[in-house]
Image (cartoon, rainbow, N blue to C red):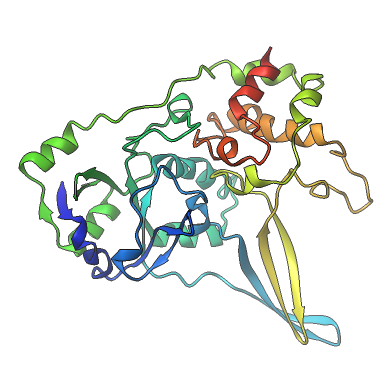
Length: 330
């Protein structure tokens, strides 16, 4: 293991990497590109916005299209030009979401070049959780505050010092470039024996099976009454991935872009014919819950939720995800 003082964070920038890290902007913690150590935030439970935007931006250009006489005459793919990047301070739940997202964007022979370009360029530095996040249940879905899943480097906070454990060769190479000292003595012992508090475990083992016959259940009407279909739960979810493809045209040029969308919007599933298979609010709420806790478990053998609790904590009408599931399961 390696160690450095928090006052030495400039070593992150001296290793030849671009750095994306948690930044507190007017009370909102999000992962953005930073250029100086002072921008990096450590005093937070979890970011308000998930780190998925480092791999799956909210708006992403896919093609440049040249127009002539209102017709496309050429189309060139616009792959991201990525520099080697350290994604620093990502929480274990967000890192855990990459297991599902990697499979989703590389499913049954299809490989998404945009996701994969970013994934290959980014080295993930997971920061362990020293305190339990409100409404989190990560330990109930296979995660935890010290989970090292998908981490290239796991980071322990030990007072004013950071202890780094290389998990992959990619992580080891990054630490070598940073030129850190070996961890010894009290710092090494603290990291090796670190036992953080964990959220209360919720029994979800039988949930995928219990939800198999809940499609027509009248409970969906009750649990969806408060929902605004605003989409905040999906936009702030580490594993939500719905997107739309939109052409932005200006004179003789056009950009075809992938932009985040959500199954909670009433026009998301509208067909070209005008037919809307999810025309009711409860059908859209049902889709979100069944997707996370029924469809994905059956198709990928994992939950489509990492238990971060953002959807519950940030819902404007205080809809609790676990309470919703338990209500429908009755």
